[in-house]
Length: 87
Image (cartoon, rainbow, N blue to C red; front, side, top):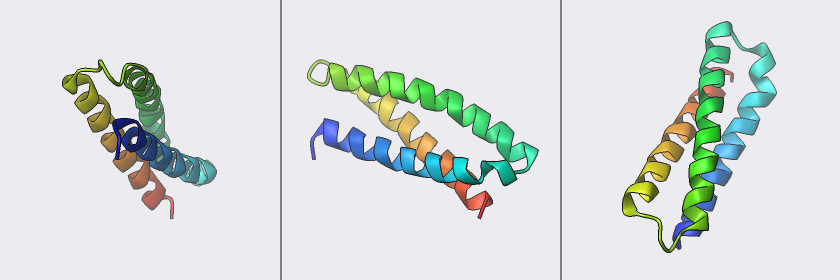
């Protein structure tokens, strides 16, 4: 799997978790809403970093790739946790 495919797959999974959580957010407790707000800020950072890495995929440093991957995995886990709390 290419770097671009890997990051697109991760981004799609994050979007899925994010969308599912957003649908149920109106029922959430305040602590979950605060967690959501924090994740939304991280989502914006991830999208920016991902766009940068994908745009410069050939020249992106290993550190930049790992930073984007780590942030993406943390976001995926965060949105998954919110989704699970709302079930």
